[in-house]
Image (cartoon, rainbow, N blue to C red; front, top):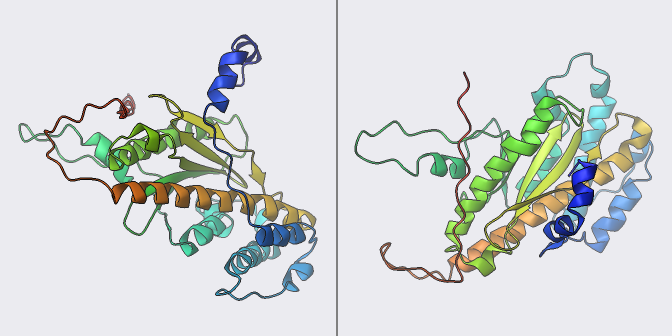
Amino acid sequence: MHDSQLKDKFKKHWHSVTSENAKALPIIPADLSSHLLKISTLKSHKEIDCLENYCYYTQKSLYVSTACLRLVANTYRNRFFSRAKILEDDVLINIWVIADQVINIYNLQAKRSEPSSVSSNARRNRDRTIEEMQRKKVGRKSDLIICNDSGLELGCGEGGLDGEEFDTKVIVESSLKTPKVMHDIFVRLCSSVENKQEVIKRLQIVGLVFSRFKMRMLIMDCPNGYACRLRSTTTAVFSGKEESLGSDFCKAYQLIWKTKEVCKETESIVENCMSTVEINFESDDDSNDDKIYLSDSLRSPKRD
């Protein structure tokens, strides 16, 4: 809430909204935390090049974080940040590819090239019937869709070139487009767990917003009842200064690692619930006090 007057007027209510059944972000393991702390003190490419090599099979978290650091260091070394003209794809391929690396290597999938969200597709085609059948509609496209190997969607992401906090594209992507896809994913996961309220309270959907060299994570949950809550983390930034590379990387990597952990936790909750689901007829009366049915997102108005 950016309006100071509203924030003061609804202080008690706002506190309830932000704190009700609020889950803390995952805690980084001690070995990785120590490693990132060491990385944060590095001030040059030469110091990064001298980092110890780790074994993927016995020290996976250290291996992955070091590999990502060296990838970003090469981008600095190649003077990427001093280029006169940078495209959106350039930023995603050269900098934020580290998010894909972390997600993919921990048995999740980071789908790029503006894939259509299966969850968004399900919402848009839910009312299709045989009579006067229209063509199947394509779901909303995102710059990033996070899912597991079976295609279960767990998060999404949007990228842009504008780094200003109140730029139009940043506001639209962080306050409208990304949350809308996140809500579609959330509604579909609710259906996967038979809309059980106690399970739904534990679900969290992530959305990554990339704004040039900045990144932050959105988290959507449903703490109590039918209203979804959207929270945002602080922003991680790559300044482009070599002496700040270690500390900048440390903050960005922590955010990416926590994103991966939230996705894995939600995947585990859904799969554990689905393994105990009983097969019944669709017509069976399932009206139960312990179930809630979230409404779909409203469709975006058509442009003139």
